[in-house]
Length: 113
Image: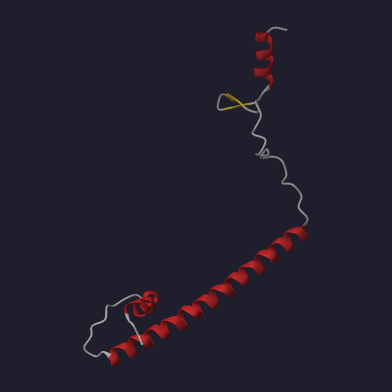
């Protein structure tokens, strides 16, 4: 059979959309055809995965809350130290530093004996 005859058979039997042949060639192996049903996954497996993710999220939220509490405690300590510094040195003007930098500034610039 000639190539021309094969092409005619293919063109007559393959559906067309907007003048183009549809369904020829292979889709990439990683992409399943859109008409194929999704692979079956046991609902218990999905439920277990969701529970694991929920547990992980809860753990992260707990860690974040603990960090925030630590930041708040450090912020209060920094404020107390700045107030104490201003009482000890009332004529000094201290730079306005961010809360997280305050303790570092105080501990690195003063030589407390």
